[in-house]
Amino acid sequence: MFVELTDDEALARLFDSVRPEAVVHAAAIGQAGRCQERPDDALRVNALLPGTLGRLCRERGLRLVALSTDLVFRGDKASVREDDAPAPLSVYGRTKLLGEEAVLSSHPSAAVARVALTLGRGHGARGTSSESVLWALRAGRAVRLFTDEYRTPVDPESLTDALVRLLERGGSGRFHLGGRERLSRHELGLRVARAFGLPGSGITAARQADHAGPDPRAADVSLDSTRARRELGWEPRPIDEAIRENRTEPGA
Image (cartoon, rainbow, N blue to C red):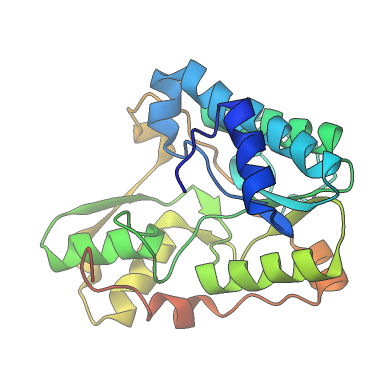
């Protein structure tokens, strides 16, 4: 069933028609550059919609888990925890943080899952962080990756496991869902090349100071996911295992 998510009345009718047992909210404008160029759209989808969903779920007694991002942080501290103060640099990060606040104020028992950079096998036209590197290398395109931009990449299967645990076990507030290792984007690219027997010479090392795009980039938004491990019994899969499951080409 198709519905315009930013139409509050249509969304309420959908809830009453489908009568879900719980809701996982993953819809977003996730391209940072698009958010910079169209901030009003980003505000409507990333910030206001989550508040509407929170209200609808609370009124109907439904469990809600809303996805957010590691980019709510400024990037000046490694292994950030849920209680560290966010300070997003980009429109994307700012609107996602507003969405977190809207969810938790409208539905205090809801959970917000801050998701790290994804790698491994994707499930749509857009590749994950590791797939995009693999596809470029296999096509002979040069890859330029930052040596001073750090994340804690995590794969979709590990994320799905964490979300199921959040739905089944409960827990409110913010949870960090990052992978086992803190890696620079350049290190991640080299791991992809090695996993598929491709030359790392196709990857050029760069620094954030060389970035010329419109969206500001956070240097280090690596996540400390201790809370999820402790309260949910969650353990993300090894990074190299997930990388080997990359789709070898778009649409595969």
